[in-house]
Length: 283
Length: 283
Image (cartoon, rainbow over all chains, first blue to last red; front, top):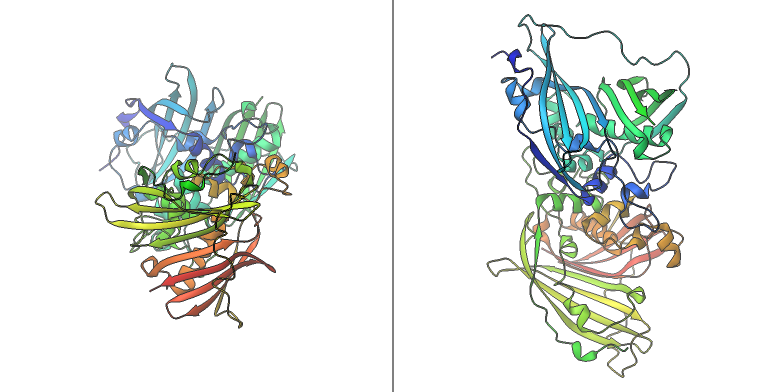
């Protein structure tokens, strides 16, 4: 059954996200906070009761707080979820993510592109405080093999956020752990592709792969410390494209080229770029 | 104000403990499951949806599920909590710990011993299913410096569960991680002695120390795999005495001497015995 391109413009009913201080601590530990950074234990992200330190949430945490419920993905039609891969992910923060709180989140089908033998679906979400103030917006694109072919717009293509032809201004290296995905999955994404060797083998991988959004969280931490002086209030927006799987235990090298209030970045494992076309906007 | 030795026999009102599958996963990860064991990812303890595997709880998990509320410790009188150290801990399992559930827990002041310049308080707890069946019982002793002197019984002394004068039958080595306590504390014990370098320095430690019960959990895992065939149903009872602080990042060597359906154990960091006088009963 083909996808329904008329779903573009669909807006979901608001869903409610609730999170606690403990959820923020668990998210931070799941993306490696507490051990690998030159700032030491990153106590403002990993503890709530350290002397003279106020707990803060990492700026990439919205990706685990929900994207407006299942509505938008249902609206585009039925398809084989095994054919879907996460393409791009963006977050714009209108204020720092609260350590604990409640948000009303609305999801929207922003675009559907026809790549011929695949489809690209772009979902946006908007999260507001109970009082109505905007907290964050997210953009996520999904690449669905075996769909497309309805004669629609192919969408934008060509390079974006290209790394300059010079050495990076910063390279931050973080080792992920062999059990990284077992911890990260407690934030909500229990897809066994990230934990069960049997399931991973059926999907064609030699072992379970790391959540793309876990790599994304490590990358956000690297950018936070490298160019935002470790201050989440200076971290305004991030976007990037998942370009290669990462295995738990891999070492991530986050390469950063600063240009004014923006930074272009790539996250690499050895010679492979695993997050490409990255851009951070900061203050 | 001295302690009140008449508190012996005090029984608390029942308190209710509730725990989820996610709590059991988090506890398992907090005591190192998922990476360091020869059985690999220990998927029965670290995942709930792996192919052909049923989730199970680690047998030492009762120590994070509560000991009958604050009543028993209040009953013994007021004292300086900074002078209290965890002395011994025992758990007897009447059935395997459920992966998720509810228990009614009653705490009791079982004994108070007068060591002259210190007091030892022994607390017992009993956890039952809502239907009334016994789940587990625990025994915990606290050593409180600066108390005692009421002329009471000094209590039992002398060696107990002594390691035989021969090489251990098993030695299981587990590395703890530099950030181990940051994860373990999400199970409930947020004492900053285990996370805040400033607080730890005031307590006389060069850096935050690992929770004794985290070392205890690693030790229980080692025993489970070494002598219970990794089957929690065969793990019947454990007891041991905390004898030396452990720093996050230390490597734990669990030395086991099997004698029929019992095993004597010691947990060591290098030449220091950190859990002494250990005994496991198994089936």
